[in-house]
Image 1 (cartoon, one colour):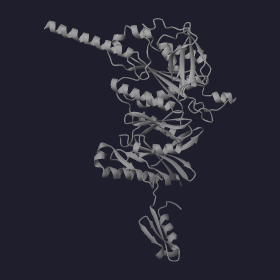
Image 2: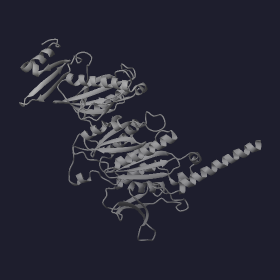
Image 3: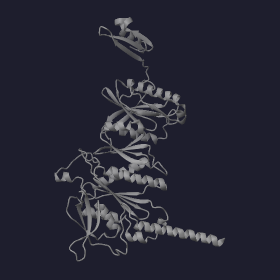
Image 4: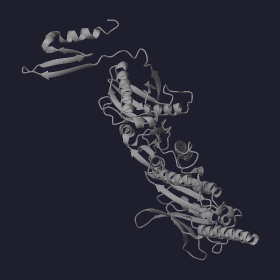
Length: 534
């Protein structure tokens, strides 16, 4: 028995060694899309170069391609060693394979690009401290421990605008824009996007390195979708936190603010979807909105995959957020909608979520909040449920009472009606109450009412305050709760072309055929009976 146990242990150890060896060979030689290929020690024992030439040319389709060349001994023509979409990928490849170090010089040939020696030197220094070197990957003593587990992303590098000056046109024209708008995604008064490209570098625990390049107007969107898609898969499979991130930018114009902006955007999206989840997939019942020169970007999850929808105008954004088919909470980026009440509303809702001292009358957080901003004869009205889904409507406005009381009665009656009509759903704590098209003019929104009791309903007046908005809670229990009389007037044209009226007022019927010219006086007298004073 002892020999059998020894043989089993030896077989298990041998199997583990073979598994680790297979993974090491797989990581070293398996060719994958976007993977940085490594030179073997037999091919390049000492690969450090004194000079590397970088140049750009267009391929047969007109797409710019970067080329790295080395001086061949005794040859007038340089040797091409690497081609890539981005100079950042060239640098990553050179560092990972030991071709470039702190003493390497770079000859950058002129062309239709903005790459400078300063940018190359800055990125070279930063990347050299973070990328796994060829010898380190091959001889690291900790290799067995790393390869004993499945590969997972351990480090992420984001390199913005490598070889690109986002303000080159303005500089060539001698324009210097002065504005309070310093967001690199919507810079200056004309709102220019300063992020023209992003190169994403992923390093996994097997020391494999992958490069993904995103360029053009959709660079930020595509990079975010790709990165958080991978992050979600890894987190769900391994129950781990997201890998460490570093954002680099050394372009000629505003490199620091660009790097900081991308870093804060990544941090905010991670906080929105991942921070409140201990393990597993992200909390995807939420939408994150950020703004750029191209419009509003709505980040959400569709079938467990991240997606970004670009919306051009504020009106279309409100319509999109109010759509009942994808109703969910909304988080607003700190740079977005700074002069719009929606950002104030969302931040107040988020603050209320974290305030454990606030308890509703129903005791289960069954609260509906209504925010409104008076604009002449109309009120911009935002209804939010306990899950912070938002429904927007543009409602005629006469007075605070005339706005609040019908809305309050509508919400209360709807919640009771649906709690009665859907007892099983009410028992589960969830009812869906469609907003009346008559009550919420132009709105297609739904409100989510929870529980069988009447929800707490709070009203807040929105007031412009400098560049933002303030909210003031409007009382609804005393002075606003004055009694309103239901009045309905029905008119029909007679043979003479005049209108004959029948008016229903507080269960009384007033017929013009009976009262004649005294019709309206009789209705007024009936109304005055309910007034405390004239």
